[in-house]
Image (cartoon, rainbow, N blue to C red):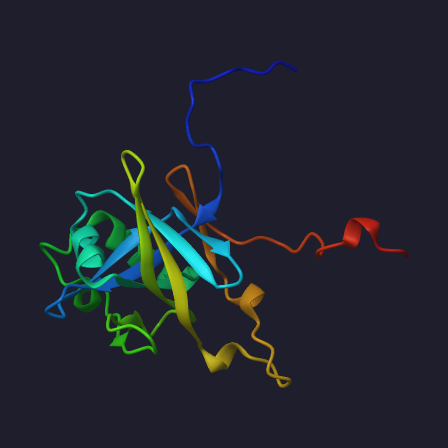
Length: 187
């Protein structure tokens, strides 16, 4: 079996496909689809998103310093795709995709009610990295849909049908292969 060396590029896949809701200082809301999003710290809880400066939502994030990461499910994948290919300059994505904006704690920008998890973030730093600029943000609140909780109050996040993105295609999360530490667990 041979290996090929390619020019440097980002081959880290899959990545989450999330809808990030934003608003400008006048309250005009928009949704941008982001595949370059991630957890970067536990204490304090922090996340990052990377956005091209020419994207319509970029300046909204700069103006308010806020955004909400809305996790995408199989039921939301069409809206997720639409919000990534249509500009908010031309369309009201909330209206076009029948998504409901709602208020969450800690930020003035709306979240997406249909998303089972909304992660409200406040920007603490922007890093200009090249084609994309990374917004590093503190997570100020998390809202979850109670219909996805079991009788003991556990949130069943792995049963949501979350969506991943890889090389221009969307995928549903697959089967469970193990849990943390299973490789050293005694039988």
